[in-house]
Length: 111
Length: 112
Image 1 (spheres, helix red, strand yellow):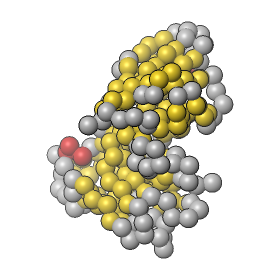
Image 2: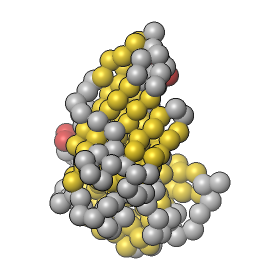
Image 3: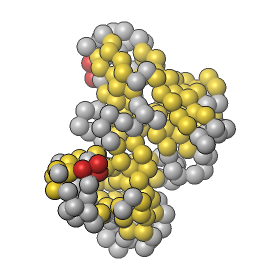
Image 4: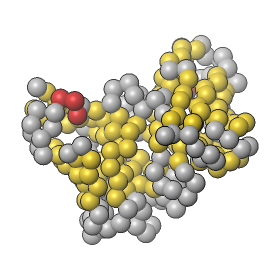
């Protein structure tokens, strides 16, 4: 079945550092891909998405490119802030419109 | 604009007690509705989804059940809670045949 694999956390960075969180997927066909963010004690917020190969989703300085060749959707940000500290989930939507999530990666940004 | 509400925000219940968590969506009609559980330090597991009133699909066997008595209301229930039911329960909605899901603020459940 479809699945999503994320890098293990936590990821600890200093403020203004470059961020990469790896995400790879296994799926039949070419599903839409998502990054959701969960701030402490809150629900999930949609961060960005991409619906087809080579699409780049972007929001709040975060970017991710849908790479069909490597079945990847890595999340990047050029300069992280303390306020970016959260758990980040990569996900795909299957043919039944159900989201399949990765296990999440916790990001801790230190001042 | 659309909003999604969940209550209660936090709940502490003894083992064996019943459970009722409520989710409501405003500003849209006939949404798809979803219940997820997030166990401590783990990812999200889809528990139930609904495409209409009275239509519930279960993803995993467990002692939880779901109901959709009204178009924009989704309820998660249990007759007898287990310790393993502890977790963070998230409700989500989407427009029919659209892929993006929008999540509520969640209910944190602790079973003692």
